Image (cartoon, rainbow, N blue to C red; front, side, top):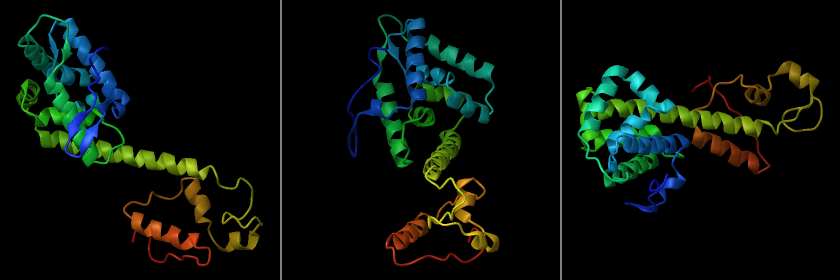
Length: 238
């Protein structure tokens, strides 16, 4: 839709072309917001339209479901807010929405997210004083409540990306009954006396390793030298 993209939203760290980093769900959210504005003949797309449009996305529905908001009460509150907005003219993106996208970008950067997600946009709406934040206040929804849920969503997305990355790398493993240490020879005796953890990890039998990035990097550094090996000792999770 014309007027959705607003390039070069300024940030403290420089300039970011926000449209490059919007997730598909956020694009859907913006398109739905424009449809709401045109349906009710509003002259601007505001944060209220964004909030209503978030309910058309899977993430938005999940957030409000976890907040325990009754759908009927939410829709009635949004309808009352729509009734207060000015009408007339073709809908354009308001500066309030631009500021919300800017704030959502900052939240995504702070969380080291790959994209600007619906959760960051809803949190930005809640944190900025506007008619939309008043709607959330009327529903007894505080920014910290949204923040806690979206942090969990962001952590889950990162974990899923890591699982997919490891799955892609695992496709390079040998596909025959050879030693998984890439010695290119069968090791039946060693296989009987030990467990092949590389094989177990590649087939999903081991739990993900979290919070050990420094140690894993050190292991790869030592092995890449070609002269040394690494032995890990201790109980699992220590």
